[in-house]
Length: 167
Image (cartoon, rainbow, N blue to C red; front, side, top):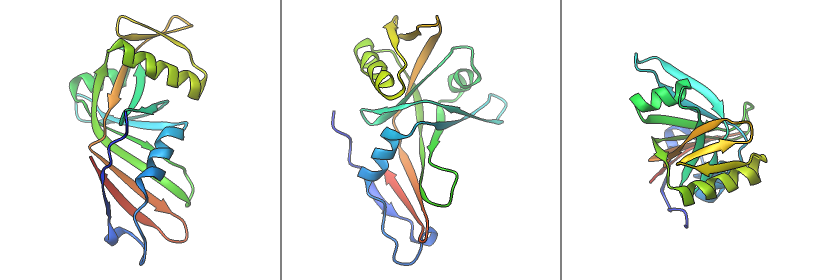
């Protein structure tokens, strides 16, 4: 499936004079290649929860797995709104903030494609069964897809920019 082409907007009030919006192709490449993502969810009592995780970009969404008893799964069962971020902790490069809703993925052919991508990207091999990822160590993971509604890109360096992509 080809990626959607989002509406691209430079936020000039948060950008250097003369800055241009970051191209969607560059942002998508970073979403595909990033090794670590940070998932922000909300606990049932309203407190935030942030945790690092691994994810893959496929079919216009970020996919990640988690155990059913983990805090992030419990939070998402209560409130599916979440944010995934990736980037770097230096004043250079591009940081990305993807907003959306996490939806359980259980279609086994799609899950197999996601599992294959996890194997290529991270070297982790999952068996797909009963709509879940089953790891070699006996771990079982729910799989979530976050199709972003909005992504913000923060370009950093000598000049800086804020780009918004709306889907």
